[in-house]
Amino acid sequence: MIIIFCGLPGTGKTTLAKELAPLIDAVILSTDKIRKQLIAKPTYKRHERELIYDVMTLIAKYLHKARKNCILDATFNKEISRQGVIKKLGLSPNQVFIVECVCPEDVIISRLKSRRADWSDADVSVYRKMKKIYEPVKGMHITANTLQLPHITAKVVSQIIKKNDFYD
Image (cartoon, rainbow, N blue to C red):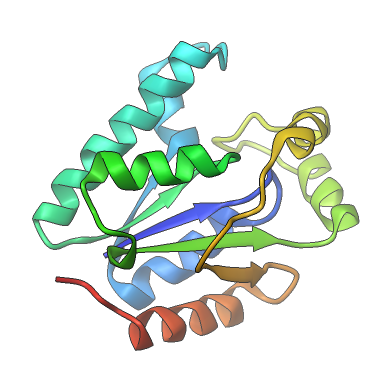
């Protein structure tokens, strides 16, 4: 199965993904990590972003064919990007879980201000820019309130996923 994590910077996507992965025996593919490993000085321009998402999608496709669970950790700030990755993976919507991470803005800002030695370069200014263009998830998805302790939220998300696993 493939789980798409989406949400604004600082909502706890990566933290939750790290807690969830061992519960569902999944590999995490992070756009932040892929970007930093492929590009020494990222510019975050459109062509670069498309490359990173294409690399992540290709790896996810191979992992899915090998029947390995996979978490895609990225902002996926537009509905078209979420649906686009599902289409590129060649999967039906019931083969993918979308987890939208949310939490109060004051918590997000506090998290972003305290980030140190992280794969992500997102700061408060990036958050504010992304907030203006972020589109909430339409359709079936899991909303994860990351204000809760990550291991508790991960356990709840894993139970929902296991209960509704349509993996072929």
